[in-house]
Image 1 (cartoon, one colour):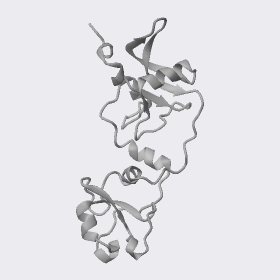
Image 2 (cartoon, one colour; image 1 turned 30 degrees about the vertical axis):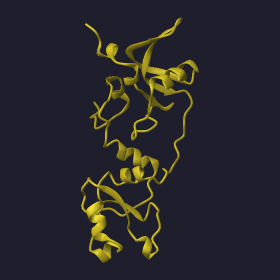
Image 3 (cartoon, one colour; image 1 turned 180 degrees about the vertical axis):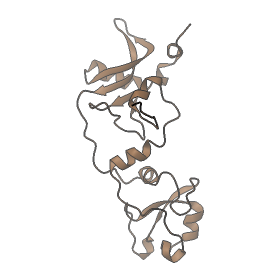
Image 4 (tube, one colour; image 1 turned 135 degrees about the horizontal axis):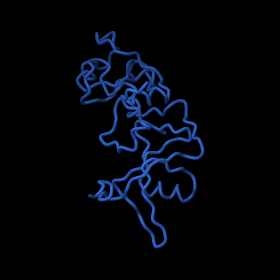
Length: 188
């Protein structure tokens, strides 16, 4: 009987990348490399293979099982604060409107509108659904009678990584489970 990995196309064999301390470089988005990048890093001796797929790739002289989990040999220090992007804003706010709590039709809203001198900063922008954003209009939450669920703050990368752990991807290879602690109850 064939192992399921053996019939997989190499392009469907991404590699989970761990830092030198064996923690994921990123939870959300999950730190994955395509198989070609992982194999190149193996040959350049920049990573250690932690686990592998049963799927092999071959050249004229070498046969190699595709790595499913690798660890960097040199520690990469994550930056303390993330970039201010729409995705990071949504992640900070857990993909939910900060006025009504719904997670559909998301956009962002300036707490103090730009027309009233508000700036585009972590502390003045929140995730909002389109209906709430329209209802609030060019007013502050107090003026509109729409209190915020949580006051906006400048998150750290640690905050975003913790929030990202709440949103596991659709696919997790069995060899990744020991490294990703998504809602896993640890044994005593």
